[in-house]
Amino acid sequence: MDFENVIYEKDRGRHLATITLNRPEKLNAINQGLKLDFMRAMADVEEDDAVKVVVIKGAGRSFSSGADLSSAFTDPQTSWGVKIEKPKKTAGRPSLRRMLTADRWLELTFPSAIAYSSKATLAQLHGHVLGLAFDLAMQCDLIIASEDAVIGNPMTRAMGPYYDGSASSWDLQFGIGLAKEHCFAPRLYDGREAYRLGIVNRVVSPQRLDEEVARYVQGISNMPADGIAIGKGVQTAFLDIMGYRKGFN
Image (tube, rainbow, N blue to C red; front, side, top):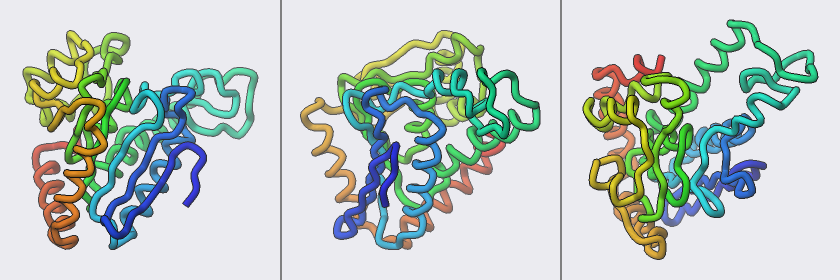
């Protein structure tokens, strides 16, 4: 399958799908087109019984710099990230209905495609991993980072603590203490500190990143496909009990 904003590859012999965010000239900033391509790729992953694990990575110098704010506010074809029927010179303020529809998609449908996938999901981080890209990576089952990665969500400085659903999920992922620090005193972490704080599962040198991810993929691919699917079902049930999806909603 060919997409404009992601590279989607499958290696059925290794039971592996790879989704590469592919806007390297923009540091893989996440615009509406990338979100839609990503969702279509994830939908295909879910339907392919040969795939047990999906790796999410970025092309070029970074995993992703986060949301593409320039297209969100300057593209005359969109308003609040949603295509509008009557384009204007500027996007203007959309209706509350349109904002709610877009926010539900961004805050619930988009992250749920990863967090509630029946496949094992692995984020391969290098370079910048900021804002929306940070939130995307945090939905994965495993996160392998390069030592030179720059990881965090500085949006709370602009928007305030717990400004969206993804911030509420940090309480469960990091523990309330670190989540509050990241909300009220946000800063960026390199790969080593992110590992020390428990934000990522493994940190390696840039030269060893591909090798380490491949090692994890091999281990997961040796597990039974049904076992992974059932295990992911149990995991997401636990997440729901703890209020994970309600936080996003």
